[in-house]
Image 1: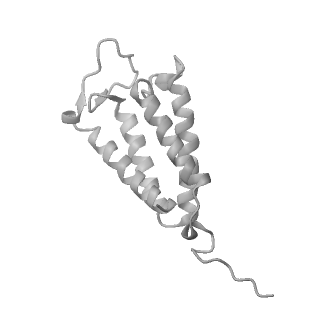
Image 2 (image 1 turned 45 degrees about the vertical axis):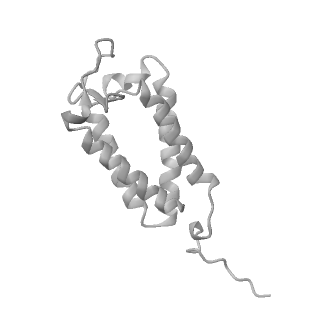
Amino acid sequence: MQTKNFALIVGIIFLAVGVLGFFPAFRTMPPTHAPDLAVDGAYGYLFGLFPINVLHNIVHLAIGAWGILAYRSPTGARGYAKSIAIIYGLLAVMGLIPGLNRLGGLVPLFGHDVWLHALTAAVAAYFGWAHRTGTDTIHGGRTPTVHG
């Protein structure tokens, strides 16, 4: 898979998750032991597993739109993958630290979000730094010819 396709697929997934988070049918109420949030609009667990709220949904929509825009060029897609790797790696670590795992009460980063953020970061790191194909080069998929 090309890095461009990674950006497109991840972008579509994030857009879908962001939209679904606004529909109560896909969200369960947080359990009584769930941490309180300052922003509790649309607070719940997406598919009963992943803690979300209105700000979390908006972030998912923005990350998704960014991925779809990044799909337009190999350089943009690689930058997107690297950025997602760093951002979601930091979010995974923050999700393990009490106090930071609620981002000041604004966004829930705890529970199943931790491993999902870590997995997202790992896959994005692969496409951002390790994965190379002929079409991911800055030469538009062509190997430069050196005449000598």
